[in-house]
Image (tube, one colour):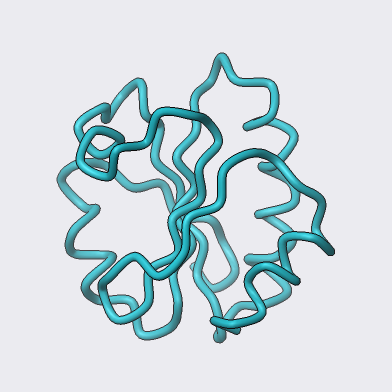
Length: 108
């Protein structure tokens, strides 16, 4: 599982967030969202390259809308960055790898 993007559900979300030993980036995405599809390979690369210092997970908001509601997510993709079980950063919209890594520098 190291370096892989983990799919979260309403049943697994809280346990994974609470148990994350490194910062966790959660991508809230939707199948119908073109920017979400553009961001997915960037997150796959970061998950593989930064395994051990950062985890990446994703939530399909159509399948698990309660998670999007819980965090007041209205635009997709939205990245929630958790550290110590709490949201420390929120990033909305697709971006390139370099830009995303620069924005995540505080948690890396």
